Image 1 (cartoon, one colour):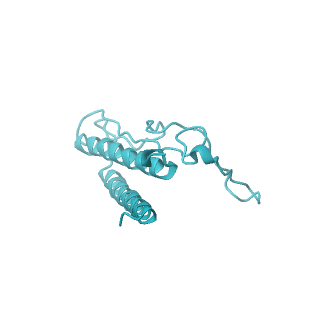
Image 2 (cartoon, one colour; image 1 turned 90 degrees about the vertical axis):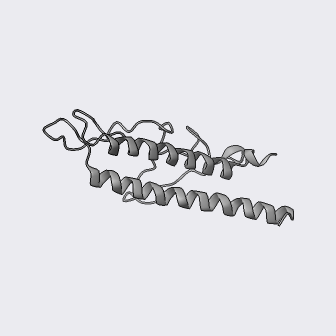
Length: 135
């Protein structure tokens, strides 16, 4: 089994690629903040389940259970890197719907999530190297 076949590393790579693509989309929104009629876009976060990109891989998946009616039901489906159709906001008189404050908050959150994913990826590779004695 190659390192590229490990489900955890594959999921982390997919997550990092999604954050890179989302950064591009958010930067495009910010750069078009004064373009008349421009509508901001965003991406749908990838789902790591049996329907989409799977973090479980050949080991199977663990289903979530609702033990109380007050718990939130697990969401299903959805493709990765899809456009978020619900990403709408207030439109200015010029027809532009970009809110710079919201976009900058999204960029900041995206940057922190990307840093967390890269840190996890790096540490996972370090653990693998330690396990095989290459450190």
